[in-house]
Length: 405
Image (cartoon, rainbow, N blue to C red; front, side):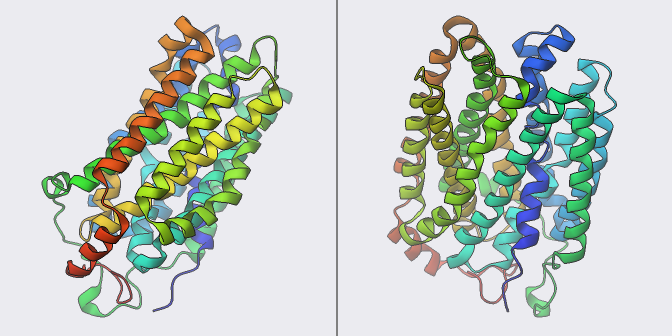
């Protein structure tokens, strides 16, 4: 069976991340508009990640009933509606509430898409397919932040959410027309099992999988911490960046969009453990560079930090498929819970560090968490050759296409 087109997978990644962190460049503006603290406006970043962490495990069970494609496309349409409704917020509390609703429906897109990739692509190409999806998340994350920054700076911030909602609606429509059903073209015996019962306990006994969950926590913690609190740092003297400039700051994500596809091939060639170690090292170096008093050096550091995160996320997403054969949608859902719990912690936990030690304290915290992720990968993930041997011994999953594992 031929692999499905990657364009709908890229669009799925973009749809999921157009809005998830869209308020980051708006945080200093929202603090002024609502006379709120950094922690309070930071809840517009934390609320959707908390909701994602809560909702993600249920995606696997829902996919068992209705199928991955329907979950992905349906969630995208619901996200478009929720994003448009966020534009009607009159208070910070209302905005936070709508951001929570956005987070509830978002896991159906990204968790469903990662599981979809492992259902439709052979194992030796899953890193590349995951990298294509990650490219979409990077482009969506950049475009969402840049557009909210520009619209918030030159107009009413409410229109930022209306615009993003329309973009997600268009993307959802294209996916509805182009994303193949994961059950089409398979022998009857290999079709997606609607009535399979997820086994959370079995997944949690998988040592390598639990390690992946812990690493995912570290990955998003560092990304959210860096790109949430850097906006307060750069909005203050001596930099004094405007809301529009803070939005354009996320152009560094495009570096990750260019590098990540090569990272996916590199992961396929050299293994997940090596890929994670390199990714975390790149991220730590980037975070340390942001301590420079030079704005160009800070931007270069942010480019490295984001690239490290994107390669790390590609590595963990691909690793899930290599260490699980059954209940992959549920495995991805549990991973998403840990991943976005890390994002929630990254949006709120550094607030006290920011108040006590400023940006240098936040950087120190980020580097510590990145090192922890690398240590977990080195100690609990199997070397590539051992994992490959183990894969040969595993029975094929009945939910995979004939050219899969």
